Image 1 (cartoon, helix red, strand yellow):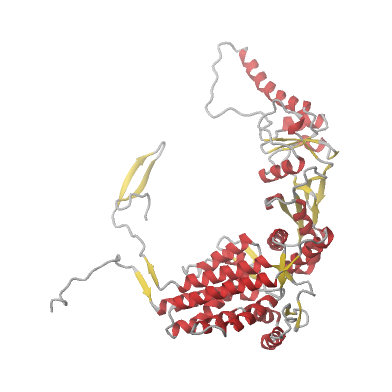
Image 2 (cartoon, rainbow, N blue to C red):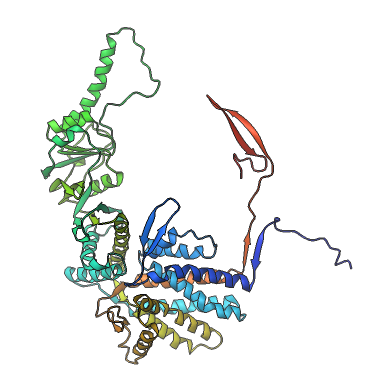
Length: 562
């Protein structure tokens, strides 16, 4: 009786939503598989595109997993983990974002029956991590190095990696054209890690084949004044002055005043202003520079002044473009025109202003430092060019990774089938329940070739049976065989140049396994109620020239309603 009379202990605030146990874990798994179903159909060369229309009216057409996951407004807390792994895959290696989401969801789907049957999640987590380690070791074992090849041969191999990445994108029809462009762009920046040295400029109009690579810097013509058209638009071996100052008459600050005792002094003040700007312009001319670029404005007076002396100038140049010009030409951005010496001036073999579509571009080519490149993209619709830019970003990242980690594996689902076969064989040597868990992990890896078949309209069951039979050959000759997207059968992916850097697959398996283990380890979700402020009083604050009413919460002290 005494035990029944004990008071109730309240730990959480009223309105807190808690859910725990097996039902909560299954709910999290269902949410993750639902998210994966959104991007499932975008995988591979025959993947479909998604059109996403947000509340601001912006339309995005893409089949890039990371882009779609970012644009989806996912509210389920567990499903947001898949968004995070897609972002990490994109930032780390650039490609394989859809793959990592599908693998994580498939690992969870395979774990779901075991959870429902009462298996403890920690047993699954332990087995999945063990299987992941074995899978990554097998990928490293199967990877082939492209190191030690001649420069031309290495370029050809890197082009194949870029073409494999681009084959699943909107610009897949011109993958060879863009693949060679990407390899040349990455080669132009050398061993540096600064991928922002590769600029991508978008010009609507024309066809994809009208796109071109500038071995240097190109940027759109900036805002200009009347005298601009009188300036020369082409130079050979010009000196280039880079500035971060204004070259125009500056208006006085608000309410500034000058007191004069004699009206004749007024003219001297006006003359002083003009003398300051003319002194700056004279020093720019005396430096010997034929091209003057500034991040800040170059006014009408300076524009005409430079035009009279056959000097090209451009003001309000974007900071990233100015830094790329500095890196390419060997110049240094100056914050003053005093003591401008030859060492701070840049140079290039050829400068010209060229018409590209409806835009005019300033193009610097033959730069001595040569640590930058610019891709000018052409195309019909704006959405198409935006997607082309995202596709090229993925290809650039892949080529960069392949250059640094020069090992590749067979694509088209070949590496996934080989790892799956290997894990099934390994699981037979393990006693206990772990054998079932590793076997289910191996089965989950088959989702990649299966989805490639489904998206291309092929019979996935028939193709997977052929792949299993080929990979089961004791000689190991079937290891590079994957899905042949063109015929609907199977083919040697290495022979068909369907390659991807080993680091992409290693990162995808690692990230997907960690995400699946993280979700399996959550057995309770606690959702705190929204804070509702009950007492709000009116505070009148006097702002000149009006009286404004501000609501202040007595509970939290914040302005406005909480």
